Length: 169
Image (cartoon, rainbow, N blue to C red; front, top):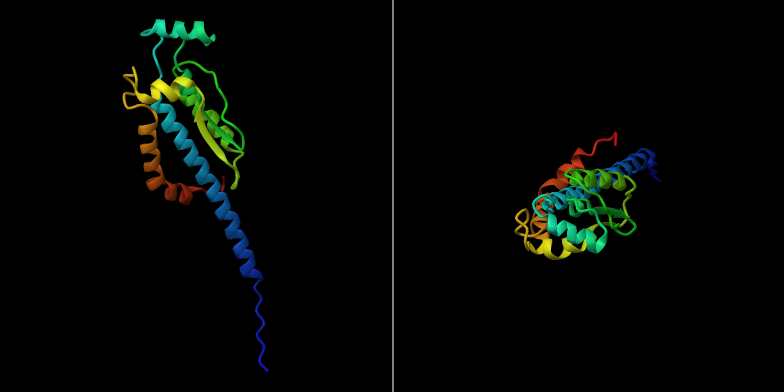
């Protein structure tokens, strides 16, 4: 009789380490992809100009109580991990950067299996701005150019994001 004894404990340990590393890299890649979506959406959303269109901003203020300042639509972009997208209020010229920074913070809780929602609950973002109506900054709307850019990131950058996910993150 011939018996072969194989100690697979090294292989099992190696596979467990691979699984942990792959999970960590997939999580990091997903966070970076979601962040790129927020970036594209925020920068494709018109900033607005309260000095050029004071009447429109005053009408919005009278109707909603929102400040007659630009930046609200850009700041409205939000990411939610296993929850719903918030209706955010923020103003100023740096609202895209602020929304992106907040999104990155929110994405840190993401784990594989979580649902990530990205959106903007400002009604005029969904309607007139998305249609390109009256916007010199976004004549093609918001979603069409954003989706085109997201598809480009998906095709070109996901592999790079996965490969660049360092072991220290």
